[in-house]
Length: 322
Image 1 (cartoon, rainbow, N blue to C red):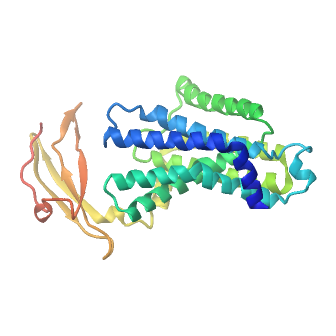
Image 2 (image 1 turned 30 degrees about the horizontal axis):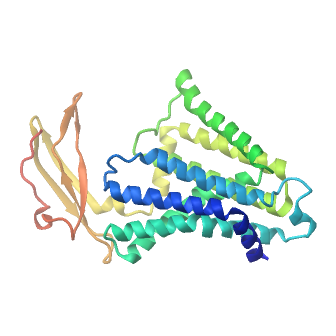
Image 3 (image 1 turned 60 degrees about the horizontal axis):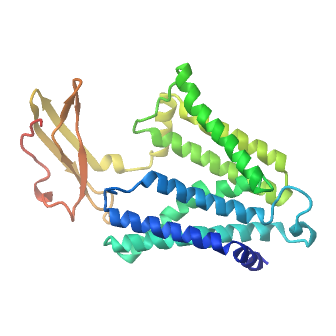
């Protein structure tokens, strides 16, 4: 039954799926042609258009067999709710994310990476898109019966997000982790919360069809997820320590330096590997820039195989300011 539902959805949506695949191919070709620094390419609008198009296709495939209401064809036949959910999920993975995965693999190979490396990177990206975009959008679409309802609900979510972006600035509320190296902590917590809410919503809808309970849960998850940005610095730092407690990355690189009035007298980088199979890393220190009395240092990582000065990386002579 799952394959029959997928086949039915493909017959109805193949023009949109083809257009989405063409858009993803065009964006991949544009990124490759623009080079590593994306010269002259509007990356943000193109990426937003790609995400919006993928979300639209996901919502349409869900609404071909909507969950809310009592007049759906799949309820009359009847069709197993688990089969219906698996069919929708399979359609999203194969026809929405499949072309995306292929273009990522081809782009990696054309940039000089091996097929295995390109496939691994594309698979990791596809998994992240599935968890961070496809499943939440799939759950959101089950809360509405038509695209009109979905559009109105999406406008409501957008208004709430904009309110959380504008109002705190007007009242003086601050986001302690914003624009810092710990901003990933709040983003990860928000995405994990949204993923958890999406999974619960899918269970509520495709198993018990509890639409209002699912809507309430999703709304609460969105609001709480937006409030995560206002976590205190102490809480954010503790979460960072908790999430990176088993990581050895911070022990693999040790950098010591002695700043003076005119630059660095001496810098030394010591590198150790995490395991026999892992690579070592070195830091190439660029001269500091003096700005408002603060010294800023830029660092760049090299692998052992690509760093031409690896044998002499342990010691470097005097480095002066620009």
